[in-house]
Length: 439
Picture 1 (cartoon, one colour):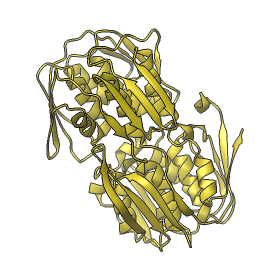
Picture 2 (spheres, rainbow, N blue to C red):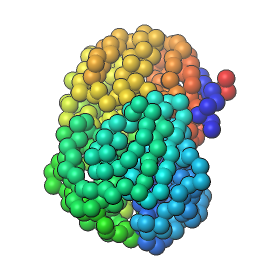
Picture 3 (cartoon, rainbow, N blue to C red):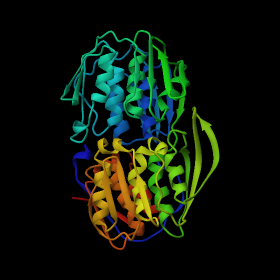
Picture 4 (cartoon, rainbow, N blue to C red):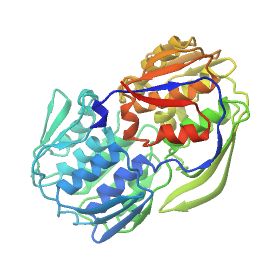
């Protein structure tokens, strides 16, 4: 796995971002297209599929469980669904690399099967908390063994699941989706109530495949025992991947960049809302709906940014985009304050601490707090920063080079391939001076 190799980025200072292009497909929707397409009756055609390591790990998992999947080829995947009860036990442990989405959603889906599965991952994934999914699944009747609440997870299968009313202790689309996927196999009704809105791709795709899902404000309800019908899925470009370029264009003078066919699901547009509050010049055009998901072309032109207090209701809508937003804050005039973002401490890395440390190395006044960060905008210098194997941190610091006073070296960047293959090539074409080197 490339995630075990060591790559570093060398970014030269200056430049601007220009052009019009499409970033890779949405990771969240790519994962779900494979999972639900495999459980559907009939053949599901997927276009725009993200050929990154995380989504490919999900694809390999369903192949290992007996699903015939053609592709991916240029983002096209054909899934010959086996129905709700057609999966077979994999003949060995299921390795999911760096993918938290895969392991948490699969835990729910596999809890309802009649066979045993063991889910493993790389060093980073093996340190991530899983009780947030194993606890509600146990409440539903699942039998799961873990390593003190962390992977590997041994899902013993064969349990009779029952529907539950579950109130999420934290806003997490992965936990919500895990419980809903287990609910497909549970007797009776499963209801999930969330404290704040999170991405709703699972609910949208279930509905798109003909499964009845009731959404009432902050509560989602499904009945077990239904079936899924195959469909066509056009995966939008990933707003999380678009974010790096949106921030890069917002902070570098004379930038004018258009990102096409980007998913603008209302549960994912916190980054647009926050950048606009900071003064960014962002326009949306060609808005349309494809496969139940709203998409648009996003144009970003340079404009001076100002520091803000980030509204807490926007935090769950931008949870993956904060590393890049911290770079925007570092380039803004004044102070930016983030609160209510404890979830960032248990992502692929402790993103709050990792970004604060890196920004400090680059000469920016950034102080981590228990649930957020305080950043005073100012000049970005040069230096060597650690990404801690976290793809989003690596790409965020790469964009900081546009406003840096000198060279930035970013270590441990191999995991960028999990979400954004060819990031370096696309960024170079757009105007960032970046080289990727093997250590």
